[in-house]
Image (cartoon, rainbow, N blue to C red; front, side, top):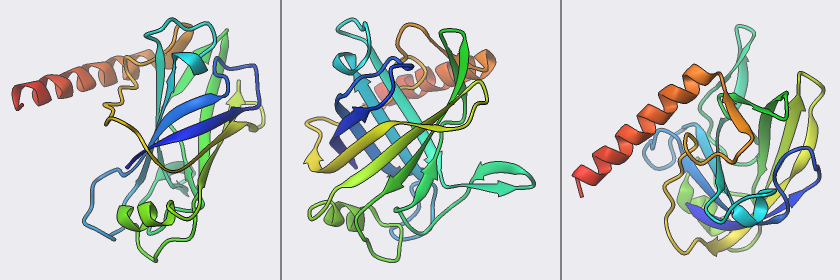
Length: 197
């Protein structure tokens, strides 16, 4: 489910500014309707919302959750509801010499008791959802970066999000070996889709 959202940014420490963004909400494993799954959240910041960007620049952020502590480690675990879910990328990034972690918390209008995209789409016709973004710099306490609010305004086209290549100048995904693996995986996936068209 892909929607147009409005980003309100409350910090100047990251290379993003307020403006229109594209956001996709999904079931990470694509489980059958209503069954528990991980929640996937993807956001695309286009050039107008990236500080100092060229026309073709964009930043694709992919997050998943909810995150729950298992043996002292916070890991993504399946859920039955959309609202109140905490999501996070699986990696960090370096920007201007600092190491950053991002996270988000999704709050949606009331939906049914199951994790169903159709229920969420219906709920968005009567109310908006809000994703609150937070960040931690060099292990400091978490603080609010901004919010992305979205409702029933659908994106004009489906987007192939690519967090490996859609990264603005100055952002270095960490660890570098994981970024390299993700880049190879996304390139292979794109090639596979082209061959099967």
